[in-house]
Amino acid sequence: MVSRGVNGAAGRRKLRGLVPAASLLFALAACAEPPSGEGCPPAIALAGMTLRHYPAEGSPRVARAKSVTYDRDTGVIAGETIAVDLPPGRELRRGGARIAIASARGDVQGRGAEASGRIRIETGMGDVGTTEGSTWEGEKKLLWGERPVQVRGPDYALAGGSYRYHADEQRLVLDGGVEFRSQPPAGGPPPLDLQSPRLTVHHRERRAVFGGGVVLTQGDLVVRCPELVAHYDASSRIERVVCTEGVRAEQGARTMEAGRGEFDNVGRTLVLSGEPIIREGERWIRGETMVWEVDHRRARVEQGEAELPAADLPAIAGRAGAGPLRVTAREIVYEADARKTRFDGGVVARRGTMTLRTGRLVARTSDDGRLESAWTEAGPVVVLEGRRRASSGRAELLAGGRRLILTGQPRLSEGESFLEGDRVIFFLGQDRVEVERPRAAFPLDRAAGREGR
Image (cartoon, rainbow, N blue to C red; front, side, top):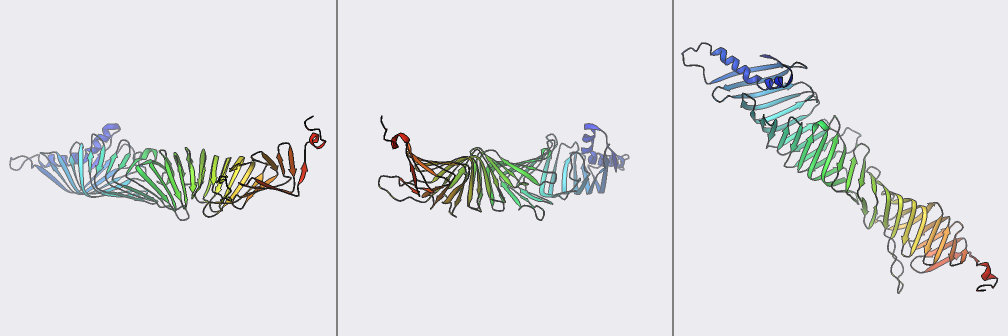
């Protein structure tokens, strides 16, 4: 049987009624002269039926069925072993599709239909979806099913519980537990897995919303957030994901938290904003924004602050311990594998009563995150401790932050007097300073004995 398409909405309405209309034509022909005067039979059965529909534009649509039955009294049409071939078009862009249905039944007007048994959909680009049984509600243009759904493509796999597909919006909703797994080509990044109770796919926008508590896993990177929006390309490869309601990420011994997170699956970076913080043991770094480079295990923090646990100081009666080293800077770069942290721009480091200011400070830590040493690399150094003030070209923190050594023409002053030498050594927490090869200087009026005149 052949049908010719018409333009516009009328053509789409006619397409929905093609199968029952074809069956009805056969029935009328068969009943033109009733053999016994008893009228037409209540049902009409067709075997081995093929229907071709030729739209005004594009390739024809073809439907085949092993058998089709039309009931005159109820207006119900039913088919067994149905196969439908749909060519590519504006509403189906993945190389067309072939739909195989075990059995289905619906009304003549296309208001509703039910499919039972196995349903299989395969697109021209290699996507294959399967489920058991579905229901079509014509007025709502809604296709839904309560049985699990599985979809596999060249680069991904998706499984979910019940589903709802809103045809007009090209929106798919999966409930009852969703699992998505990317399968990148050889040499690409590790597979990306997503799990959540619910998924809504907006296919026109190439956007998928995972909700109800989401877990993203890629290699040893784990990201958790209440809701995650994934943006994908024409091949269904995820390009980036966005968490907007709070995010927590883990990679190895490091934990990151922020109000918002965006993972770039191409550039392999996790961008955190909204008071982001990264922790490893007792050490932490926080700032305005943070970029975590997944493959290099490196964090870049803007307008940052860090706390590095340091070695305990000698117990002195009446003196409190100096605690950790606290550092602020315009930019902080933390390299986890190298156990190194670089502070750049307006650096201020504090431990106990000591404050150090410089242009760049580099700190090295032990495996457990405790400070081993630190040194300056750019700009002059200024140190304040109580009434003492020191300046130099370079500074170095040693012994886990117990000693601060100044070199490069260091000068130590207290009041109007000062000392210069080869090195100035602060013993933190002990109220003690040593100057190697000191050269003393005093105000001229004091040296001439005119003080107080």
